[in-house]
Image 1 (cartoon, helix red, strand yellow):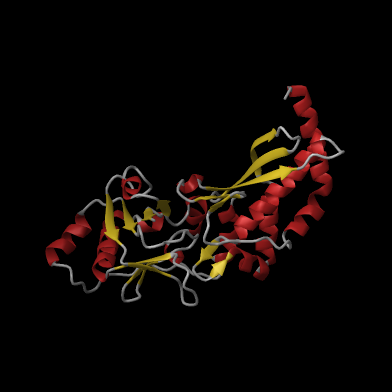
Image 2 (tube, one colour; image 1 turned 90 degrees about the horizontal axis):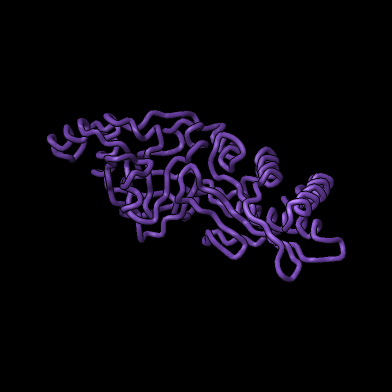
Length: 300
């Protein structure tokens, strides 16, 4: 498209979007959108959890051609993309027991924040199709101090959660020599290999041991770090998690024995490790202090 034509289209669309923004977005938040929480990618868009602080939610929209011209087809495409973004976001697991769609019902603040995210979603790709319809791809960041899903949700989620120190290892089955070695080694983070167990991503995962001890959770990390880059990173392969990832150059690698939900759900967002591996994580952290910094990667 010629730049002059493109400029006119953007101008008309912007004005139209501004005029329609409040009724559109208020209606969108109450629209029944089909959500498949087990699928992260569909023809309408999806979530890439593997890019750490740069992870994002993308959705596409199509505006059908009509008698009001290309500019209005673009407006319709943007609206369609925003509806699809909302549908994807509603299916996000905030923690083991809470879906985004439930949190939006419970909290007017979260509902307003998500509405604001939709309004400010970034257009990252757009073009006119051969049939005269208009294609738009829009994006919202998962993490970031402002303008992200985490910044819209986590302050409300953590509002009544008091910070807690990490558990201490008073007694352990680990040999004395290994215990000393774990405390003196310069581990830069931890990688929990849960590959093949069906682990699902979430904003607030927990590392448990097989006895139910919570080794690491939202109460153990600065909320601003959780908002800026997430509590954990996700990787699709062990090699991706151990080569220059957020867990650093010398991560402690442990293997999950299972994944589990929370007190009231079976959503498999939390990892479970052996008691001995939990002790290793906590002992290594005494030297490296990597857990409060979120230097944690889960392999799915």
